[in-house]
Image (cartoon, rainbow, N blue to C red; front, side):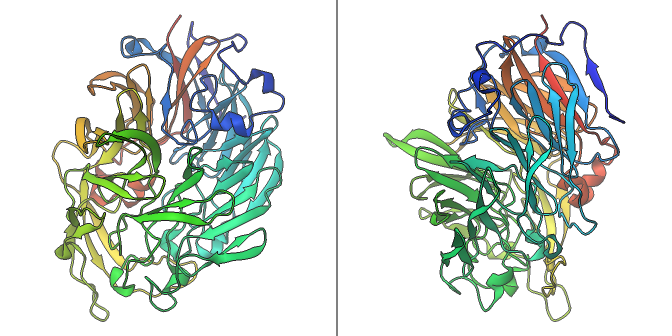
Length: 583
């Protein structure tokens, strides 16, 4: 318990039994089922999935806290993760049966009492000395199922704990951390399977998605996302991904990158898993001719077999580290008079994509950032109109290639931080950033476990008044309806509710609430450190609560160059904050 604290605030610490608003109380002994997870978006008494529903729309139907009264909400409690292991806290809480589960930096998992903030138990992974995370020691959240709480660790393992005691149930290796693999995303549970991706695209790994039995951890299927690599199903070969050497030359597919480091979403209506894939390796695009499939793409997979059903590549032959991992969120909308099953993605490359989620057909792409110097829009077939002068030049022998200015920077128009979709307004709320970079290519050769970039860069601001911008976008028109500009980069997730609210955090330490229709700032609270986690809301004891993690870190202070220097004085931290209306 050393280094931990709990703060309660007079008159607002809740004590009572769960009300009928918590539909899973009868199952408290057994725990959440597959059906409970699939119904998480409509369930208000808990938060059972990363994204508040398998489609990850991050929308709540709760209205107790709303645009008219949100200015009155106050802290119920704050609970510290304690110790010296601060750094970035990018997790989304999971709430079930009176307990809040949050993961922390350095692969830790905590269980807090949801009424008082008192710590019930914690688990700390025993990480080896040789881990190689590219972008801080973060973890984005856990998954819950039955009596288990499950999360990934920085040494590329996945661990299942008993949710009541924190004791290990099973612990399985995803990949070899000594080759540069790691894992930071929250697992996705579908049909009794734990679905995970991997991290390590900067080390020449091979991105993959795999499914394991939720009760035993045993591997069911494994699907590499780089052409030429063999997939497996129940221990047997299940066909190579794509076609060997169709978009890669020689043996480059063996170190092709494409890390699936952000996790995925699932659509019960089409029975498809959607995963984004990361940058190709190396960054130096002149060393790997071709489109380099399936990097910088969204792929749809059969959850039973791991077979890829369709793909759409957002940045063919990526030369800017734009990745393509950003979450693909299913939604329905009427386009040209026809109700369609769609999906949307705000990509690192600065464009907001709408696809037919049944087949991956391109619908539209619209810019959601100030500028995109690498491409001037997309044609009707969904191909980018690439600007040749926007690609950094090829190295000449041992000399670096021509430097170009590129926008957005490699940290992206939107990085990992998840957006939200409101079925009430029909808008997506995108945590975006306006910045650029000087980028150049360098000679590089692959070496196991070593950084495999072949590029150098310097991040630069492109506007005087902001870097971050929370933008509300209409997916039917591609128009930005409103925006809120923030001096520092936005690096946290977004929540929207039927109370006409949008919540997100800022590196300056604030959790903020906005009017979902107009973007007017309605409330803010200083948490003491940068907010880079994803807020959630739920109902407990007849009251609505909002929770978020506070703790500055992530990729910006590590890779942000001139931008990072501007915000070097932000204090680190590690706390769970919970808010409610006062009685």
